[in-house]
Each structure stands twice: as C-alpha cells, then as structure tokens.
Length: 121
Image (cartoon, rainbow, N blue to C red; front, side, top):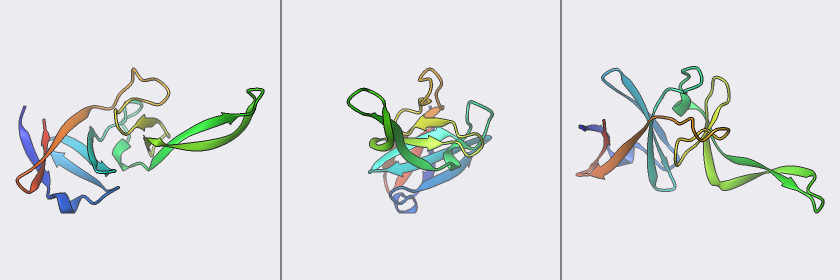
C-alpha cells in the first residue's frame, strides 16, 4: 500500500467532500462528524459519481400500534450517500448499499498526520 497526499485538513471542512484524482482513480473524501470516509467515486450500479451525491439520513418507516405504516422519518444515526445518477443509497460509515449490504463501495483508509490527509492506495 502507498500513502498519497490528499489535502490539508482545513481544506476539508466538516460535512465537506473533496474529489481527488490519483492516477486513473477518482476518490471522494468526506468529513462527517469528525470522521473521514474515502470511497472510489464510482457507483457499482452503473458507474455514476456516487461521492458527488447528497448525503442524507436514512429514511425509515414508522408504524402505528397495529404495525401499519404511519409516516416516514429520518434516522440521523445512519447517514447515506445517494448516487446522483439513479438514487442508489450507501451507508456513509461502511459503504454498504442500503438495499443489499453485499454490494459495497470500494473503501480507502485515510490518515491525518504531519498537517495533511493521506489515503492508502
């Protein structure tokens, strides 16, 4: 594995995203609640720029006492990345597809040291 410089920490603010090209690989780096997440910017569905999509809390259905649908709500404990091409959703913390955890984004480790953010390729 090789570490490659991405940017300075101050260039990636909280809730920010930065798309970087390293050779022929495009990687999206996202800072959310202090954590850094890096994924290849390719949706496994049809190759869309997944990291450029919106980030939204998981939508969950609320049920009434008889277990019938009542309304939709958001679960802020589980953030998703939504691919801008076809709306496929992926868990921000793991890269797993919301509809099928066997489908995943390609994940990279990010380290912060010596005044920089580095990705391991």
